[in-house]
Image 1 (cartoon, protein in one colour):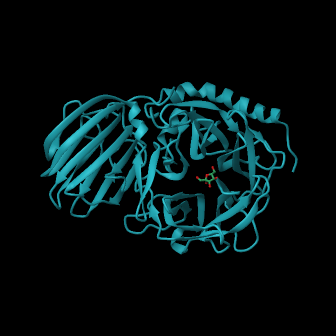
Image 2: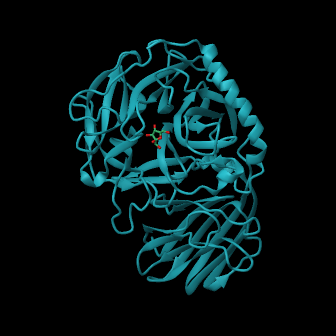
Image 3: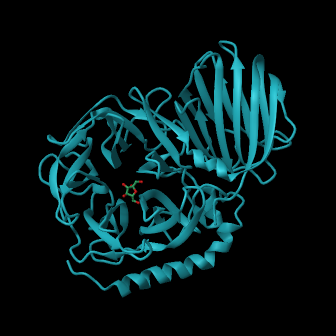
Length: 499
Ligand code: FRU
């Protein structure tokens, strides 16, 4: 396959940037556009890509359709930050301008080599009209010296076909690369010929010539027909494999989203190219969390950002010429074989005005002075008797018709997030298994115009939701059965993350 000049690429990018400039004012004026969660300047954003640290700056690329608030021909949008807190938009990094990626620069990752930033991504080409079957996916790379302008390698595609064996020839995407000893490795999303999700392992010494090592891990029939966006990394003396399986069937309260994202904890055996692991657990029990990607921060913490949306969900923000946002950066740690997710500590830099309350019995409905808003962080500790039921409503309208309800039900041992009366957009209920610890529930809740992210305790559970309230629905109401006491509540207004 031939290689076209970078001018051609720049033309694609310049045209897309010009178009984005035109529609940006509409997106920026949107009531629902987040202030401290990452979203595209306008139009479509999905998977985080190429999340990395290069020359002292964090880079976040993303699946981007610059020409509409719907999924389409994928570009790589780009933003960067010195601290994971304050961000700036950068020019589009990759455009689908080559014959091997003409129908999309699909998801991938980044790694530094010899002072240059390499992006590894999947080139997608439709070969017929059935997009579930008629596709050719190849693995490609682009390189940059300055972290701004990227040039696709003349050797592309670096891998032009899936390996033989029990590997679907077409669904073959999303390389997540890392350096280990003398090798670069990547894991790749795959499905078997009998429709099991699996991750493939490749290695290289130069980032150009890649050798297929093994099927690193394969799911059973519970774990869907395809694993998208795998990510493998070490934590302490174990490894975590994050996967985004398509096609898992609901089980009780679990797996009610279109697709899931979760993790397997185990040991990566580099010699054998195998990953022996424990069971699958969700990374987030809410409605909107998919295709997350991790990198290491300056202090060696494993940081994850996910796409806070979901395939096929109605996205009312599309009417305002944008769609999709990221979660806040979450720090991952292991306790035994459980992954804990907590808000990145540096995010507290965005905190503004603070209001606190202490010692309030949660009986019936309680409103507290100064506790309202739709761009804020709430921290709460609630002491409760066994079996007590209490919670919090946010995005509440004065007349009580709109509200999003978070209930801790001590009888069920569940935290329940209810969007039935949230406003526009999809409704539904999600439940996460949660227990009181030392008789208390500790919550941190991040609300940002059209999203909420909920963190429980030391990061044992998270729940995320998009919701679409009217502009006056910014009330917050606590409630309870009288068996719970709000020991403390802190509310911080949050400032914008954009420089
Ligand atoms: C995950 C995903 C990836 C693919 C990309 C295309 O959301 O389906 O597997 O590379 O999105 O936009």
